[in-house]
Length: 319
Image (tube, rainbow, N blue to C red; front, side, top):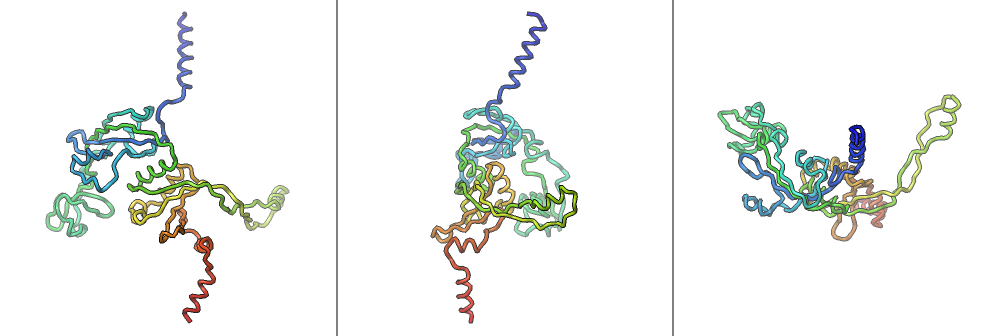
C-alpha cells in the first residue's frame, strides 16, 4: 500500500473516531460519589463521606448524615481536577487525584494577615485560634496585644495540596432522588419532595390586530393598552415539603431564590412550590419559590372558607 493510501486510511479512521459518541459520565450527569480527602503533607482529614473514617478522626458522627453524596457533574460541586478525572468513567470506577493548593483552597497570602481593633471582636472570642467574623470576613485570631488584634483571613487550608480518593457508587436517574440529593448537597439536610403535572391558568399577552394593520399601512397609531387572555397550560411542578428545620436553615434563608433557579435548570421543571402542612389536618399552604405564600383569598377559597363572612363576624365582634 502506498504512503498516500495509508495516510487516507488513517484520516478515515481519525474521522470515525471523532464521530464516535463519548462514553462514560459527562457534564450534566448525576452520580453518587463516595470520597475521602486529606492534606498531602500532614494527612489531615479535609472531608469524607465515610462514617468510620470520620469516627476514627474523632468527629461527632451523630451531627450529620453519612454516605455517598449526590453531585451534578459540571456544576462545580467538587474540585475541577477531580471532576475532570471522573469524566468518561463508569459506575464502580475509582480514582485518586492530587489537587494543588492553588486549585484547592488557594495559596497562602501573607497580605491576608491583618491587624484590626480588638473592639471588632466579641469578648468571648478574644483568644488565639478563635474563628471570628469581621466586616463580613471570616478569619482566625492569632494574637491580641493591647487594643490591637492580629487576624489571619486566609482559608484554614490555604497553601495545602489535597489528596482526593473517590469511588463512583451509582448513577442517579430517578427525578425525586435527584431533587433530594441536590437539595441535600445545597442545604445539608434531607427533605421530602415530589413532582406533579398540573393544569394552571396563565395570563398571556394578546397582540392587537388593529395595531398591526395600522403599522402595515404606515399610519400612526396611538399606543394601545396591552390586552391579556387567560389560558390553561400544563406545568411540571416540583413540590418541597416545608419543615421547621428548613425555615431555620441558614443557606435556605440567605439564598432560596438562587437555589430555586438552580433546581429549575438542573431538573427542567416549570415551577417550584414549598408545601407546608398546618396542624396535621392535610390542608397545605403552598408557597411558590420567589412568589411568597401565594394568594390568600385563593387559599381560603380552596379550604372552603368564606373570607367575607369571617370579616363580617370580626366586625360585629368589635362593636
